[in-house]
Image (cartoon, rainbow, N blue to C red; front, side, top):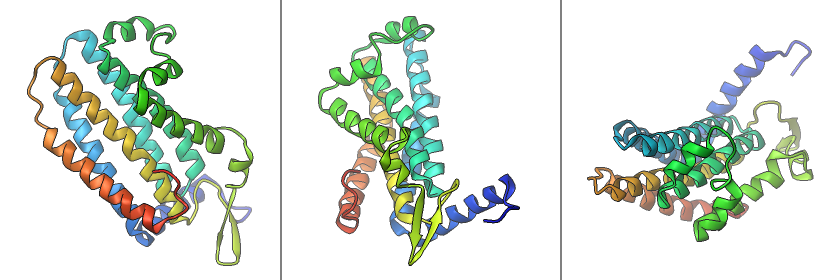
Length: 240
């Protein structure tokens, strides 16, 4: 970068980093394909929902907020902007947990009453405590992001630069770092899948036919197989 570098040039570099990271990593290509498939399924289901007003509004708002955070986090991740991606994903994890809990416990009226003011029964930390194994899993991810990306910690401080060979570069909005991109996009997949599971549960409650059961099951199978291969190749990935 030079003294002439401004937003236009940085945006161009982001697009170049996106292309470079994507082309250099078959794992990134695989993760992006799985996430895209999950997002597509979720949006198809979301567009087909026809529930009672409180249930419809609660599911739609939590689901849209979750998916919006996931989409933006994935985009940042493809640029190699790992900490920024995870900071955005943190909000998606919160809404994802609230969605899953609201559906599982049918707390639709609670969401409508608390939404305009302050979440109490649906407070994120309270919800995590009610979700048992899934709650513990989401808490682990949320805490990890908080310590690594969302706050000015040593972990985030150490992510301000990256190396290519013997050369060190600053991360300013992007990085030629396909492994960071893999990590960021992979972290988006499970919350997106949990949105799909919430939809399925919502349909089951009303005794409605759910046309996407096989699609969600196949997606889960493909995701688990992908994670197994990725963890074998990337020993530095402690949890995906």
